[in-house]
Amino acid sequence: MTAARPTDRRPALVESGVSTRVRVAIIGGGIIGLACAWQLLRSGCNVTVLDPDVAGGATHAAAGMITPSSEATFGQEPLLAASTASASRWPSFAAALAADSGLPVDLRRAGTLFLAADHDDEQVLARQARLLERHHRAVERLPGRATRRLEPALSPRLAGSLLIADESSVDPRQVARALRVAIARRGGEVLSAPARPLVRDGRSIGVERLEERGAAGHAGSAGHIGQVGTTGADVTVMAAGWATTALAAGLGITVPIRPLKGQVLRLRPSAPDVLRHIVRACVHGRFVYLVPRPGGEIVVGATSEDVGPDSTVTAGAVHDLLHDAIELVPELSEAALVESITGLRPATPDNLPIVGATGIDGLVVAAGHGRDGILLAPLTAAAVVSHVLGSAPPEQADAFTPERFAVKERA
Ligand code: GLY
Image (tube, rainbow, N blue to C red; front, side, top):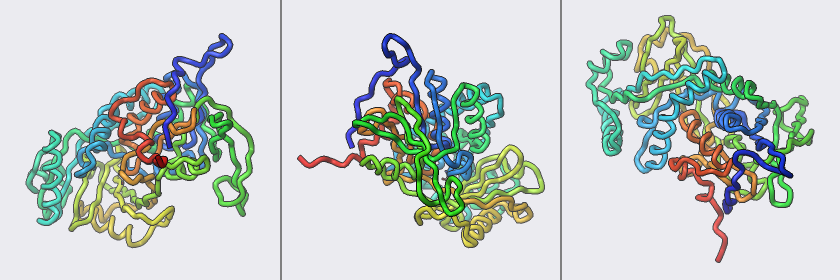
């Protein structure tokens, strides 16, 4: 794939002396598609979002961690730089979204406690601390007693923790709702419809709206796909998570994204505010996280299963997540288990998203955010606005270029 040279479309297309707003179609109504749509509307574009499962998908299952440091791993420095840049955009993104939608967007800035359950797990903590110190990140090593002073509900048997004070979380369902309202208030459309890009003479001209006719005859079921109409657009953005691979393949473009299954639970403790911090932990070699929500619920996640597009919630995963959560916070054994759900993260071979121009003029991709869709939404949306309007994208998003997966032509 070779990237098309960006076309300067600012501030609007001018045809025959008449200025018209740039029309953008976005395939995918998860956090990435919605965030792009909202920012494009704020930049003066006309926007239509199409998705057969608007309130579902990976966003619906996501925990909402804005945690660049505690998610960081050795060898992933470009992701750390991009995540940190996107996390720093979240406060203004949330405030502007709340103002635009008239709905609350709660950015909880309580920080993360990274816990070790036993001595071996402490080695994992020490490694994380070394990584963060090397990159001059704010991190404090705490013994078990100091950790419990911060979070009295934690088990007294815990070995110790890292305090990463500058991390935060949001409720992705709340954010997605606010985005949909903000999009509508700015004159954008969110259509409940499957769609695919429409390309003529090597140029993207919009999308085909599709109807899936399965045995039950409802949208979203497997079966024949019929075209029910087209939506013209100057630019089309493919933001359909792991389904983007098939959309792109239909046009001969390589966008390598696979579904990475994550099972997640939601617990409702009887007491309010059992936890204040985001808790990440290594429990006898297994990773788990607990993310408190403003209403008192706690999201417990997540498995990481490379098993294809399988949405089954399994007894073993529920057992392991509950076991580890209760080992960390014993009183969670009394909590109500209110939800068990699977999300399919859109994972790429190098764990970086794929955002930018494709080899087809007027066709942009914004997908493959893996574990970091919520975290990377503000930076991705800013990058997509630049790719659509032909301005320079934020440099922290340079590593997202689709060209890194380009099939090299033989000399
Ligand atoms: N960001 C957490 C996860 O993907 O499980």
